[in-house]
Length: 158
Image (cartoon, rainbow, N blue to C red; front, side, top):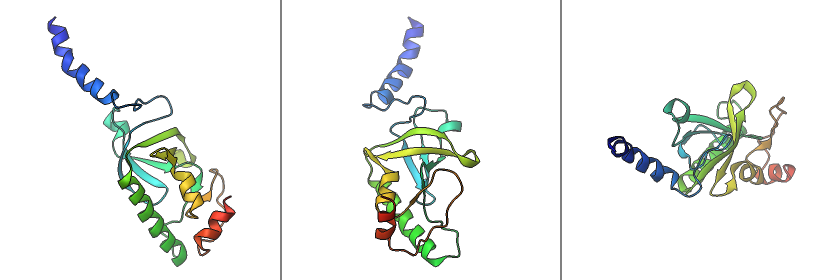
């Protein structure tokens, strides 16, 4: 009986976390993660509730399947587009009610990559549709023309 009384607070805390509808993690999916910051439009830092801090606190995740403009470049068009893409992505995350990481894996250079879902919508698809990213399969990067208007890039992505 004493053991049961000892474990009740832990059980209640666990139920409080898993009681959030649909927030249980599984092998390749982490649900209800918490946004910390984004370095640019395709690299985002999260805290993953319910995991050990070594694996779930301030973890950088790259958006799977896209390449976005770089902040550290001499190309003025690319740098400008990178800043606006970063700002837009930050705004999406700040307004988000729920963020999930799906199909989590290791990518090129052993980085963690995932499909990032914001309120049920894919960040990858959002970036592609708005001309803020090009498709990228993890292989050799092609030369991107970030000076093109976003609508032109978006039409190329379709």
